[in-house]
Amino acid sequence: MKRRVSQKYPGIPCAKFLMEYHFVIPGRPVPAPRMTNKSKFVRPEALRYLEYKEKIGWFAQKSGVTKIDTDIEVECRFFINGGREPDIDKLVKAILDGLNGIAWSDDSKVRRIIAEKLGSKTEYAEVMIREYQLQNR
Image 1 (cartoon, rainbow, N blue to C red):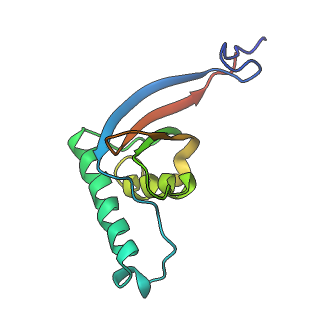
Image 2 (image 1 turned 180 degrees about the horizontal axis):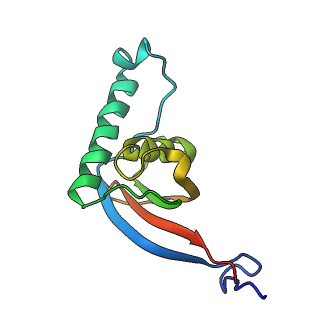
C-alpha cells in the first residue's frame, strides 16, 4: 500500500487534522526562565513568567479551547518589536506550560511543534492547537 506524502515536504507523510483552535495572546511574549521553587516567588522575571502563563490559559479558555485527549500539534508565532529577543525554545515552553491542564492533560500529548519569531510593531503571540493524526496510506 502506498503512503500519501506532503506536497510541500516530499517524503513526509501527510497529517489529517480533526480539531483545531486558534487564539492570540496580546503583549510581549515572555520566555520561561530558569527557576527553582525558592526563586519563583522572588525573581522579577519568574513572577512575570508566572503571570504570562496565567494569561495564556485565560485567553485559551476565552477562545473556547477544551482538552484534546489525542496526539496534538502546536503552532506558535511570536511577534516581537526590537529589544533583546528571547530564545524561541523558552517562548514555546511558556506556551506549553500555560496550556497544560487546559488544552491537554499532559504536554506529553504534543507530538509536533512549529514555531517562529517575527518582527512586528505590535507584540503578541499567536497559537494554533490541532488534533494530530498521521495518515498511513
